[in-house]
Length: 125
Image (cartoon, rainbow, N blue to C red):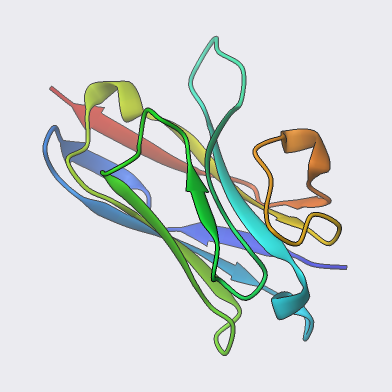
């Protein structure tokens, strides 16, 4: 079992930055690839970024590439999402997720076993 708790969301002006954190419970965090997804009101959940279990491989949605950075600190059982140059269209609830099967990470939400409760990010224009 892995429990995930996101933090770091908030209200920011367009062009600003935020760093989301996702703290995981358990001693096997390094066995899971991690992902960030987001869901805006009235829209489906969409992939944002993923990172492999050790952190050597990352992949981003085209909409955030060059602006967002996913990273992890296995010693702290935490995965991060640094978001720069935020846009109003980035407004959503952001979720972190863990997969114990797809060790390189995945863009498919169905591949993830555990999910956090989400943290709200609102970008004002």
